[in-house]
Image (cartoon, rainbow, N blue to C red; front, top):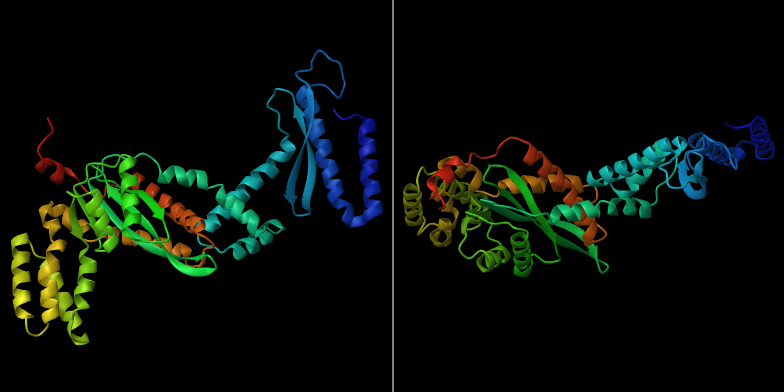
Length: 396
C-alpha cells in the first residue's frame, strides 16, 4: 500500500545513507527498511493508510513501541507499529522473535548440559555474530526458575518406596569455596513407576536440613510409605526417626559393604570381607542370612575382632528388604537407583566445576532431574507392585 512518492523517498534515504557512511551505514538502513516494512504491514492490516478515510478500515493505529533486536550487524533500535484493540504483530519481526526465543532456549539447554558461561558466550558469538554477556546468560537461566520451583513444590501422592541421598557440588560462598549438599528423593508409586519427588539445597547436610526436607515432602501430600532406603548418614538417621518414626528402613547394602571393608585389619583382607557381605546379602531367606552372619562373627572373632563386632551390631539394618516381595528385593536393597541420578548430575556439572552461588547449583540440578523424571513417568513400569499390595489386608 506504499505510494510511489513514499517509495521514492525511501530509496533516496537509503542512497544518501550509503553515500554518506558506506558499509557502516548498513545498520541504520536495515532499521529504516524494517520500520518501513512494519508500517506498511500495519496499513495492509487496517486496510487504510495513515489518516485515510475509507469504508474498508478495520481498526486504528495506536502509535509505536520501541524494541531492540540483535542481528549480525549489531543491535537494531526499531519502532514497532501498534494497533488499538486488535492482535496485530508485524510478520517482519516474527522471524527475529522466533530466533530470539530459540536462542534463549539454546542458552538454557547449554547451561543444563553443564556448558560453562564462557563457552556459552563463545558459541553464541559464533552462531549469532554477537556476544552474549554473563549477565544475559544469567538472566536467561533465571527464566527457568518459575518452572523449576513449580516442579519442586508440586503436589505428591501415595509413595510406597522412598529412596533418599545427597550429592555435593562446589559453590562460592562469602569469598570461599565450599561443598554444598543437595538432598534428593525419588519414590515408587502403587503403579510401579518411579518419579523424582524433590530436591533441596542448603549449606549443611545436618539433621535439621533433612528434617525440613522430609516435612516438606509430607506437606506436599506424600503418604503411604512402606519402606525407606538410604545410607546411614547421621542427619538422615536422626531426621527419619523424628519425621517417620514407624517407617521401616533399609540401609543401603552397597554402603554397608564399603563400611565393612574399612574394618579389615589389613588391606589384603578387604576382598575377603567384601565376599562375606555379598554371601549374607545374597541369601535366599532372612533366616539363612542371619545364620551366615552368625558364622561370620564366629569366624572373625580372633582374626578381625573389630569387623566381627561391627558386623554383629550393624548388618541387620541391611536385611529389612527380606520382609518385602522377592521380586522387589534386588531393586530395593541399595540406593543405587538414586546414585545413577547423582552420576548424571555430576556428568552435567563437570564443566561448570564451581557454581557462583547456591541458587545456580540448585537450578542446574533441577533441570537435570526434571528430564530424568519425565523419562521415568512416561517410560515402562519399574516394579510390578502386585506382590506387595496383594499380601496387605484390604482397607474396609
